[in-house]
Image 1: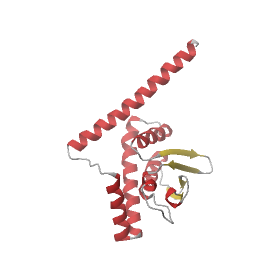
Image 2: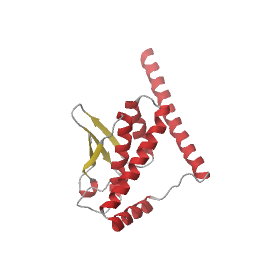
Image 3: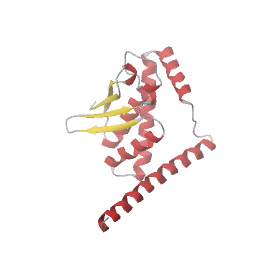
Image 4: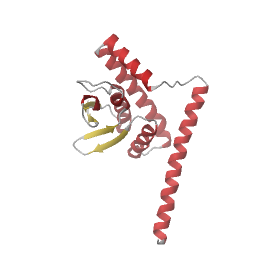
Length: 178
């Protein structure tokens, strides 16, 4: 192994340690908020029951509520993380890593000049949802709207064009201007 390879390996290891340290700090911050009664954690099953109750009680209005909750969380998360990660494109990588570790699914952002989409495998909303004729990842859709709007600095819309709950292999979200 040459000197350049050794230096590159050391730098890669240090970068990975820093990412893990930041994630550990996020976990510590969450538990601090939890201890101070400023955060809650609910089992996924309870979230799914909550989601079903919203749809049963409010129909399409329940879907809007879920999406707006997700959007608000996406905006809040991104604003908070922008202080530590002012490089907006790399922030997507940070958020993707956090959400994957939190069990939200594996997110892949595909950005092209003419179109953009997010592919999520193992979406927590779709994986635990009964079979559906329509996409079901309303909270995630809103979350992505909040995050991406903050990163690009303007309001965008996200639509779920494929969903695991409808029989597709993955959930696919199309990013578009409003």
